[in-house]
Length: 304
Length: 294
Image (cartoon, rainbow over all chains, first blue to last red; front, side):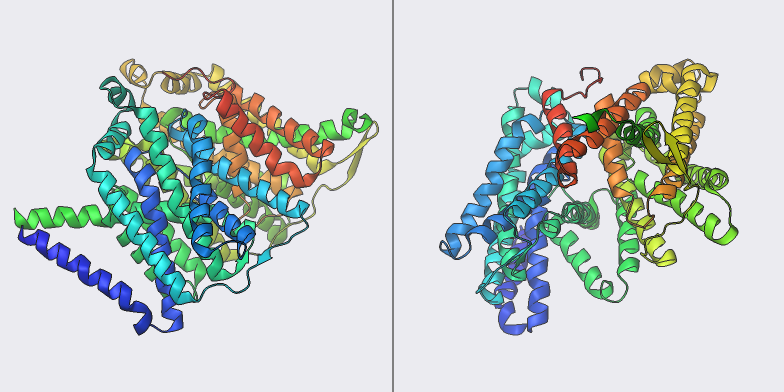
């Protein structure tokens, strides 16, 4: 009970700090905070599907890129909120369409298929843009960083609550059962196909909106960059380092990597990436439950 | 339509197919025997490519010799990789439970390390050299000698590997391990030794492929990724773990790529390749030659 109150108080303080942040931070730090929140939202949304079901998706960037594309196409032709929701629904719709055939395959087939799908849609968008004779789209009159920050904060909170709620729910138990043994789960009456597709669609909504917000931040849409597989890879790395089975995981993972990249990226990008690679390998080998899993374990041990 | 029947296109398709077959072979071996997804395969190719590039630039050694160096280097790396990391991974019960995704992540880490290690060591410059660039006329087609070398060596190495795994004692043991892991151990096959062999051969073939490719393409630290993807498409087309199927997959992908681009435009190359790949997995989830799962 006592720890419960402590952690609730901790969350409240953290949230208050996040809300007050734009008043305290300079422009550069606000940019970093925005980036951190976007990674938290993206990684949480990945965990709601891939973390729980064990279907490792390397195609999360496709929803992100699609959301950004919708925003770049519709900007200033409709109110901001409507386009943001539209971007989210675009991601969810794409997931619904590709979900059924894609989720029939599992294991390595699924991993490579998601990467293939993501690249496929990237090149489709590039071809469409080339057909329209557009080479990159500039966005004029984008909202100020502070507004974007609050939208992103909302997204990160919603994504975190989604993972938290789903992980504790009946659906979450079903999704974990799929991860542990899909055939056994099906035999016991878990509606595996429905659950997988539902989780896939839900997990695609958030990155759609995040992509739309992010393109307003950079004010430039370029498909090679926004559909880049690096985005998907970074999400997976953050989830693994943070821990992909519970809501605090992505927050730790995203914070850790954003911090590391702030320290090293500008000075020595290649060294930063080598360290990232070493960290990824070490976490998979020695800390498979990630930072959050390790912390939970340490706390349990101290109490015992 | 005339151009489609040309020897030139046929040769291009064959050269590409022989590279794809070789690259996919190494990937397939490691996946087939140990269920490990080596996404660093393209990076191993680049290591082989750099070996040949520096051998040519610094020592003046031709690729047809330095390719043995590339094989040795990458095979040694394979042995190191297996002994230090993967022997532990396959034995650890917790890690082995989700072997495929764990191996994917570990190899992804390796690929980042190799890419950026190469960038630190050799800079991100594109490297290329001219070797065996004489023109050989074959009917109405003209082809550079180095492309013929790629075709010859690639096809020979692939064939040698397939024959080795089909007929030799060690090769049969490996295939037994691919087909029935537990039963293979029961009849006294030393899984550890086979796995070490598979790592050396799989990595070595990637190094060889990279060395060959460096004759005709530029080598960069980040140039391996497209090959990794193509190799995955090839082995999924042919069925994971099916070595002969991989050759068929390579021919198929190369044909689609070369003839598809000739019919449309090079701008559509990626859409075409990924489109066919997705269509096949959507329609036949187990791959073209793959056996039905479960």
